[in-house]
Image (cartoon, rainbow, N blue to C red):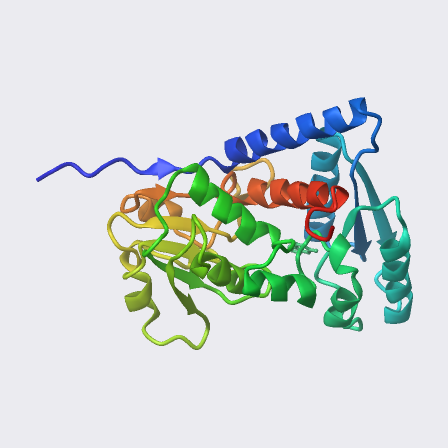
Length: 299
Ligand code: GUN
């Protein structure tokens, strides 16, 4: 029997770092030419530890490429009206090119109301109806950073997408749904046949087993098992979960939505957790901020 080809473990850190290097060079040239640096702002409400970590990483990455970064922190009991005023302020401050409102927000705040208030030209998360609508129509738009990063990974590793069956598991507004739309677009690097699976999907295993490219964005630790994956498939893992681990100093280790150790025995390409999709999300946010600074999406 022919020996199966070795799995390629996709190195998201490397791809993200190359992209950040390109962004850094462009910013250095801007500064040399007497222009301002791009400015990314983040709004952080409350003290959810995961949100704190994400915002700190975004800030660090922005500084590392030469961007200005500022974080606006508010207590968890900020009112919706006050937060809308913060958004108004960020919309009008000409020094800020783009900003994000870190999610989730406390329960008493209507997340949609806040997001819909963001100026689409500063919406570097790509969450506003205007950017989502434009993305669906295939027009220039800020793209949600995680699906945008996954499209870049597929391109970087020259993974054929056109005509392939891509199965996306999870229909969140941030990842699953935009992912399904980007993969099906009539564009180079896309043109896939897409199935979007979710909690009401019947025969999920049968569908995932038919995937040439499987995107796991379910939010459940190690949900995708080896028997759910076709031999030779490409598997992209969006999940990130802490599993208790007494052997580690931190007391935990990170896993994704995929049972990596078993699934990797069947795949042609797979993303690890950590070091796969995660680093790309931040790199694409920086890319969006640079595009905002240059008024490329909204001239
Ligand atoms: N919460 C989890 N992921 C994200 C993200 O990409 N952007 C924002 N604003 N909040 C998040």
